[in-house]
Length: 513
Ligand code: MLC
Ligand code: AMP
Image 1 (cartoon, rainbow, N blue to C red):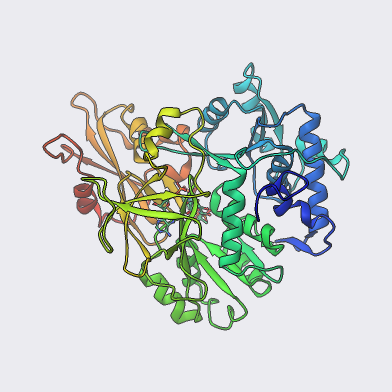
Image 2: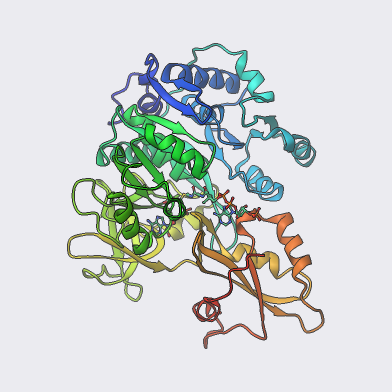
């Protein structure tokens, strides 16, 4: 699919949505059995686009959304693409203060939230010019009422490949969240490449249990389905009973490693219950060799592991037909260049030599919203993006991730930046300083642990600290364990040695609260 060929001049919209407009085939089936044909979903997209335009929202303006997963929520995304608006999805776990930062930083014109939060946001956002509308999980709400009154057909706004489609905020190693700017080209090229590589066709049904506010659930999953004209079993969230109910109707599954470890704990997982499945894909966090092996032994399926990040979409994937090599994330995607670069001298590493992973290609974002200096710093002079991941390419070109240069914890597929939590902890009573680390967790892969050095004058109080954390940070970021130490281990430069802390606390007991 190349830009400039489509008379509608919005290639992304055309390839994801427009070309399916008269298809009566199923696009998605909800957990309660409600079926949405492509035609009906596209009518809803048109109605949503008309509603957005009737509110005076202009191409390029940002529409922020923090709502439960539903067909109507997905239609806001496709309607934004149609109308040339910039879609800004937000994790439903984010607290009001986290959301307010994103709204202010992005200059969002419209914010669509869950009905129970409307009054609070209207109060907090009064005077900022952000319009607050609502949408609930069942598709009702103030915004839904506007949508219902609109025409089933709607205009398509012309866009070129460099126009922004989506802003996705990622917390940073500095503790300051950055909005990755994803263009129409980023999304379309990546979805087309993956659908081709994984041989997704209109005969496929994806079991969709991921959230739709991150690139995994939205771009890797939904966009590939749309590009291929496939269908989805569309679950509100990952839940074992719903997954096993939908499995017989599906051919594809995509998940974070936690989904696979949870499936393996369920006796319903077997060769028989998965015999009609064509492909299981894992990503967003390291898939343990043990999970890979046990899944193959139980089901006969070899999980296909792939690698990506918000700023770059997907970077590498194990092959569909060739060897899916355990412990690797496969080969760089067609059109995507991966370089492993030595820290000391910036030279490209030899095969199997570990270095910084740099990426270049049409998949890489246009930079960070309103952060020109930060954007410059994250790209090399020859246009490669610095992922912050460490790894090596083997002699066959398979990429192996070996660690992270960035201080990051991945819990159940969600990224947690310690700096953001440390900044809150350091302001708590009785805390002189803190270091937040990830320790192994059998369910989430990593679990957040806070190491506290007590203030000389005041005693550290875990309960009040938990309350402060709760009021400011999304639940998945909360430390599950607190430990106090007399001092943090530091190297000769004064840098906290988190590696030592991880070793010291690796065996910390599993009591979560
Ligand atoms: C929920 N909790 C988590 C958590 N998810 N804590 C840490 N990490 C998480 N990921 C909290 C809940 O609030 C709850 O707190 C407690 O942990 C247990 O909840 P649960 O019922 O067991 O969790 P559940 O709701 O089932 O959610 C777990 C999950 C979910 C794994 C299904 O986290 C999930 O869908 N993860 C997928 C994330 C994802 O899509 N990542 C892709 C990012 S894109 P309490 O206190 O109430 O008990 C990306 C790039 C790429 O990374 O390459 O794809
Ligand atoms: P995010 O910023 O949420 O998009 O997360 C991106 C990060 O997730 C990457 O930089 C990696 O560190 C990690 N990641 C993604 N896929 C994998 C994978 N297959 N194995 C290990 N880590 C992964």
